[in-house]
Image 1 (spheres, rainbow, N blue to C red):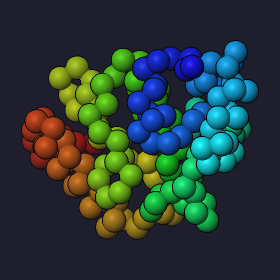
Image 2: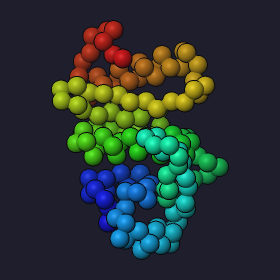
Image 3: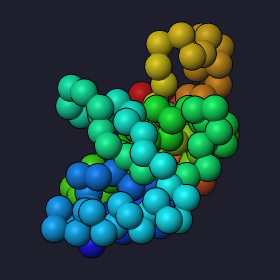
Image 4: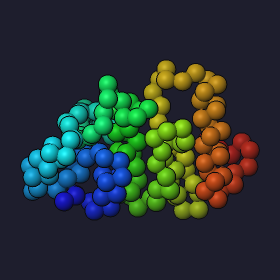
Length: 149
């Protein structure tokens, strides 16, 4: 069903289907099934290439999925998918107040936060950085002050 079976959990856990992650020989059947399950077509920006990406989502209300914009939600999952395809273990994906993605690269834990220009002021960004430190701390990696970038 998927181009890469490692992506299955992203589809099922986050209710998002990127058309280029679906086996092209089964696309019509899968998209018809998703339509019957309440999924609708959206075209958010592709964070890795110029242009947009065909996507199927449900529970989108006024361009938002919960408290996240369609762009933020889809980019977080798209970045997570790239990491998974590169065999980088994802420790968590958060759509609320925590760091967006926490991944493990070797012995290091990486906290990824997706932001767009103007979405937060300086103080809010500093607070998000501190939240990232807490998330890494919870994962078991303890960084000395000044070593988190």
